[in-house]
Image (cartoon, rainbow, N blue to C red):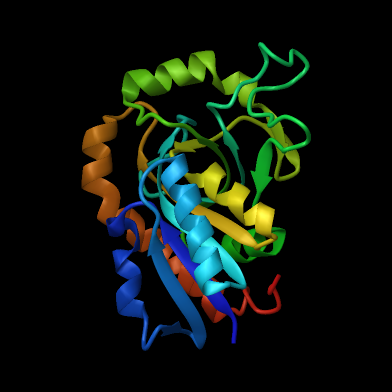
Length: 235
């Protein structure tokens, strides 16, 4: 029996899963649900503890994110190919590095498991798109996103999901969760629903749309478990 670790930063982002569980199982799989807390440090620490405790076959980090691409709308669900730490910048020390590069071969874009990405994108759920995420330490309002797009976005250009691109979404945890999963060889996936648009009111949109966003990516998780996508992934 495979075990899936379901993570979300906020309790509200994972509460919807509990009604799906019967004696800790969902579609015949053991499922553990953990709230990590907000921010990269909290998310990394909680992911580390949860992996050690539950020894999952795979993990899926779910939640919401702000749009950096003006074409994205509330309710679109990003299936992440990877995420980058947008705050990490050692170029003043190592001029040959790119923004997000970790020194000494530590990596730059932390990738999601290709099989899980493909299975998620095949879910019969509307408005899915393949995503590249930036992770930062600030909740960006409209002005903050405009400044980020102007001053930082181009520096995060990378080959992600088979093409050269800049991040579509920004959140506060995903790169940290994927970095911990990668260190342990745990197959991982991130699903982020758009909770605030590029030009919208981030605070108003986020609070109003959170519950609806959860329902959108909950359907993708249900598909992953129903189709057996986590079988055979034990690290």
